[in-house]
Length: 248
Image (cartoon, rainbow, N blue to C red; front, side, top):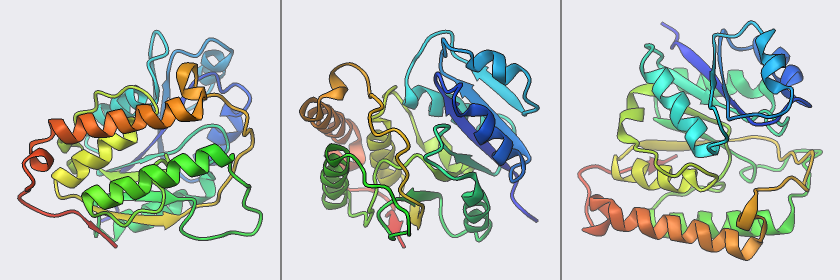
């Protein structure tokens, strides 16, 4: 039996892209959840005309991590087997949804994470140097501390086994949320793999917001989140765990 899959698409002020992304996604996903993270542009009006499974609207902008937490809760409460997450700024190609679905159907892993650095594709964009540098440093640090073999810690194009979502307690609301997720995945012994996705930057000038627009501040913030999560998680702080995460 094929797994029941929910596609979750976080959005914040994505009027420029949302219709095109959802039109493509409709061809490849039966059930789509949009998490509107307090958009103040015309995104809510555009979503009102879309035939999608559900829209969760945050009354105010709470952050990327908070949007994923809402998606996790929705998927877990409605009997889905897998949740696929993808961004709505055309940096993730809906055409790859079947690849994530096929990997999920093989039933070999708990998290299937897209990687923009696992393979070079013709036409890949050049990432902003500070983003690539910070991603590489954080990915290397996670690999060294947790024993993963990841190549891209921050890609938002992922598939999650819904039964595994019970292991996550997401309290980091913003863009550092993946760091918390990886530590908790390691402590839970979840099986992790990566599949290649294209490196696309339609708008390399897009902002993280506030202090995170400064690369030094952003890296230091990520490291603070990592150290706090490592200190908080008993399986790391006491140097043991009951089962091991794998990367293959």
